[in-house]
Amino acid sequence: CQFVIPDGVTLTIEPGTVVKSFDTGVTVAAGGVLTAVGTGEAPVVFTDWRDDTVGGDTNGDGNDSTPENGSADAILLGQSEGSWQQTSQQVTLTHVNMRYVNPVTSYNYDNRSSKLAQVRITDSRFVAQDDVPGDPHASITCQDATVTGSTFTGVALNLSYCDADLSNNTFEHADVHVSHSPDLSGIDLSGDAANTFTGTPARRTLTTFKSMVPAGTTW
Image (tube, rainbow, N blue to C red):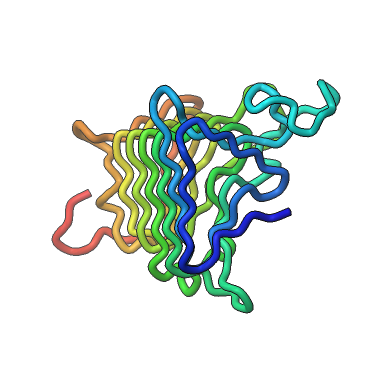
């Protein structure tokens, strides 16, 4: 069963809520709005449906199954009904913890599908569990992406066609890839708002592809 937020509908997820994904947890269709705002004491949690450590034994099999990293999507930016267009979604995540799952996945990966889509992530944690198979990642195609004060541990961040603002984040064994960005100057690499990269050199990288620093700006 797929849970879809259609055009013109807003879903607000309250603090302390646990959302478990079998394949895709929440699909935000074109024009849909998802707001998940937890607190430091009661974050919103997205995880694999086999994760018994939060929300109980959802699949009722005791210890017979275990979660895998990257086996499910927490949030999918989906297309509008009868079309490939992925437009005007708004996703806001504040004090959200995600484990095992791919945090945000885009239905399409080109600029035609990303008009007006916005993703805002603040004070959240995205974690791939040690000694568990799989390689989770966030792959976001949108017009505006803002990620601040968050931690990515073993979870790569891929941004496409986004006007990206990244500040005060920590990337632990997690690389960042930005492609076709119209403006890289919002990605802070120095100063008080600088992003921090730690871990092995192979997973401590920021790579860019066909992206720009506009005239008159400094990066």
